[in-house]
Length: 322
Ligand code: GDP
Image 1 (tube, rainbow, N blue to C red):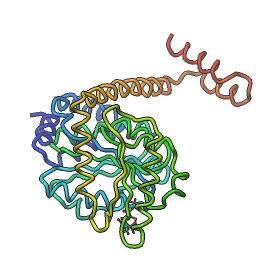
Image 2 (image 1 turned 30 degrees about the vertical axis):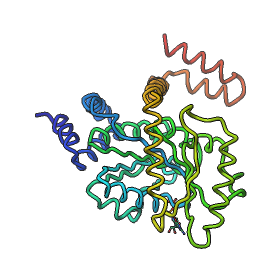
Image 3 (image 1 turned 45 degrees about the vertical axis):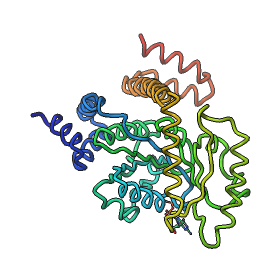
Image 4 (image 1 turned 90 degrees about the vertical axis):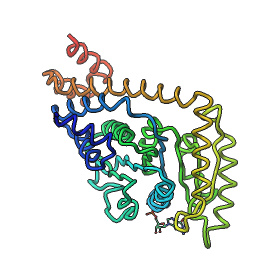
């Protein structure tokens, strides 16, 4: 049996080691590894798609890891298999990672029915997103029925995540109205469910008030899906409160999306968009690798303001395509 077939069987058998190894293959930039990774993905594709794909965001300190650990443990106790992946573009700059800290989600990482994978480091957001998307498919082939993709509430990574998941969850702190201005409206618009965390102790009242504020704010937004109205739920990750209601909401969302046929449509559109972003990325890579002699020259001209960027791009692409 070839190594790839071994890997495939290991993944289909649900072995975490095989899954981790395959994700490492996907993350490698070596051309032969990339070819193997694509072959493996093609073999596993028929076994993908059976999970509920969740995107999860919130600013640092809001309680994401506390929540994911508590929520993940609750789901594994119910018999689910939970995979946690992450996208953190800031880690490509700082070398750190939102899931890199070993002390995060210590209990969940020891759970046999959970799989936690830190952010792939290095590369552009597009590259990181691609690897996370492929890792998600591998997790599905390995039998994980809940895949959660975490991102920090900054920058473009939310959009990348929203484009690869079924449901997008936004976690907020009980700051209430003041906070509302701090959050980008665009991120609110992506949310299928808003969770106000830390609804405990001294924060309890503020959390209820905040929930009211956010509900009104959501009301004013255009619904993302015809079959679903985004809602706001309270939780305390620390006290493990509100988790059951959140899981029930997620299941209700999945049912509404499936029954209306929108889940299938959305996934198909996402796959198409993914193909196009691959075309963009692969073209750009091929262009960079082509070592066109004119590039440096043209760059200088653009820097000096002698040639407009669009004209420069046009001229270089014409040479590249010839
Ligand atoms: P992350 O940066 O979003 O992953 O946030 P963490 O999960 O690391 O939590 C940040 C801080 O908030 C920690 O000190 C947690 O103990 C605390 N925290 C998290 N969830 C809750 C909660 O539900 N209630 C309270 N009171 N504190 C919480």
